[in-house]
Amino acid sequence: MSGTWGERLELSIFGESHGKGIGIVINGMPVGYEIDYDYIRKDMKRRAPGKNKLSTPREEKDLFDILSGVFEDKISGAPIAAIIMNTNTKSKDYSNIQFNMRPGHGDYPGFIKYKGFNDYRGGGHFSGRITAPLVFAGSLAKQILKSKGINISAHISSIGDIEDENFDKLNLNESLVEKLRDKEFPVLDDKKGREMQEKILKAKEEGNSIGGTVEVMISGTPVGLGNPFFDSVESKISSIVFSVPAVKGIEFGAGFSITEMNGKEANDEYHLEGEDIRTKTNNNGGITGGISNGMPIIFKVAIKPTSSISIKQNTINIKDMKETELEVHGRHDPCIVHRAVPVLESVAAIAILDLMLLEGEF
Image (cartoon, rainbow, N blue to C red):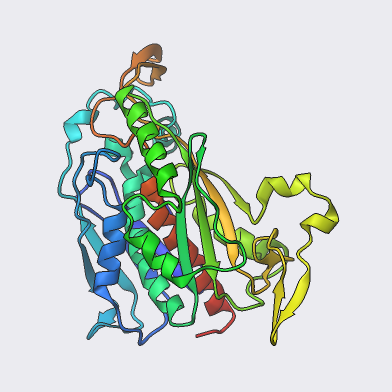
C-alpha cells in the first residue's frame, strides 16, 4: 500500500491507526552503531498524543519493540524491524463514517482505490499515527548523523497568522538543538508560543482546527551531497517530507520570498572564514545546483489544519450516493503542527543519511 522509500536506506511502514500495531522495516542502516534507547524514547514521546489540551486525548505511550537488526545494543546489519502496539483505540467513534466521506481526509479516494476494503477507523493506514515509526527510524538516523557532526533541529514557525522568530540561517547553535528538544511547545520566542497556544485552544473551543508551519535546519552537512535535476537534495528531502500526512507545501532558504529579490540580493556571496568557504547569506538554503554547499540546509513546511472537526460539513454517502451532512465525533487534534516537529526532524535525518550513504560516507 505504501511501497518503500530510499535508495541505500530503504524504509517500509505498516499498520493502521486502530489495528493491533504499527511498525517499520529498515534496510541499509550503517552497522556497528550503538543505540541510545533513551534518545529514541524521548523523540517518540515528543510526537505521542494525549499529553495536553493542545492534542487529542487519545493516550498512546508509543513504546517500541525492536524485533530484529540489533544485537547487543548495536546495529547488526540485518533489516531492522520495529513494532509499536496500539493500546487506546475507540473504533466505535467511527461507526458513522464508513460510507460518509469526511472532507479533507483520504476516505473518498481510498474507498475508490481499495474498492471499499480500506480500514477507515481513525484514517486507517492514511493516519498521522503511522508517523510514529518514522520517528523511530529518524531518531536512529539522527544519532548516526550526530556522530558525523550533523545536527538537526526544528521549531514551530507559525500557527495561523502568528509567527515565531526564524533560525539564524548561517549557524545552528548546538545548545539550541537540545533546548528545543526539551520544550513541549518548541518555539524560539516563548511569548509568541503562548499566543499560538491560545489560538489553538480557541479553535478547539469552536470545534474547529488550525494549521501552521515548521522550520527545519540541518547543520554540518558536507559539501557535495545530492545531484543535479532528479536526485537533488531538494527532491530527496521533499519526497519524504510529503510522506508526512497534512503536509501541503515546502520551501528552501528564502523560499517564495526570493522572487521579491533581485539577483544581487538573492545570490549567496562566498567568503573565507579561516580555511573554510562560507556564504555571507543563505537565501538558497544550503543547496545550489541541487547539491549541498556546506551551509546549513534550511526548509520550511506547511501543515494544513486537522481535517477532523466537529462542525457540520457537507459530504456524500458513497453507498447511497446521496448528499448528506457530517459531524465528526471522537478524539482529534485541534492542531498537529507541534506534534509534526519531531516527525519533520526525523524525515530530514532519514533523507540526509540516505544521501550520505549514496556518497559512501559510511
